[in-house]
Structure formats: C-alpha cells, structure tokens
Amino acid sequence: MCSIMIQLHSIKELHSFIDIINEYPGSYEIAKGSYAVNAKSLMTLLSLDLSKPFKLIISSENADEVLNKIQPFILHE
Image 1 (tube, rainbow, N blue to C red):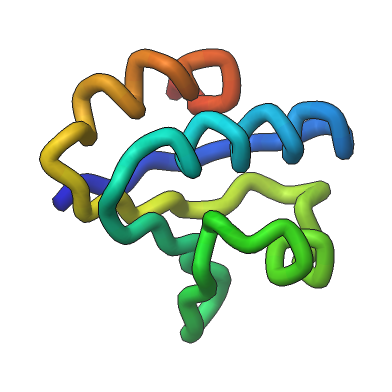
Image 2: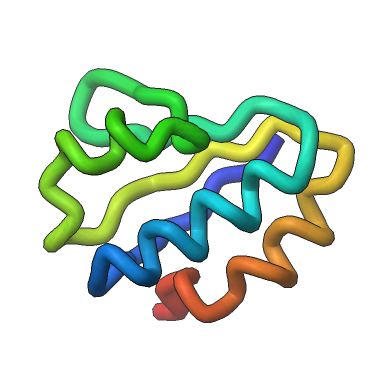
C-alpha cells in the first residue's frame, strides 16, 4: 500500500485519471478529511471539491505501474 498527493485541474484530467486506475485491479481510495471514497467512481469524485489536492491510497500489486502512468497528476514537493 502507498499513498501520494494528487491534483486534478479539469474534468478531462479527472476522466484520464479514472481511466488509468480502472485498467488495474486493486483498491484505490481518495482520502479527504476523515473519510475515504472509491477513486474508481466518476460520480463519487465529481461530488468532491477537486480544486484542492487530495491523497490517493493505492492497494494494488501494480502500484509502481499505476504511479508511473498517473505521474502527470502527482504533486511533487
């Protein structure tokens, strides 16, 4: 399991992000405040305030490959 900070700037980026993580089995959750939601669900993510960065929690054997593909959305400090 790993967690990273993600930032999505548009609906197009949101769709791209969801398409990528739906290619891989595993659990993907968005942690906002005290709750976590399914990151593979478009409707769930549309209900969040995506104007601010959020934490993505990945529980997948393919985590390294997923991280490589979602690189454009990862916040680097």
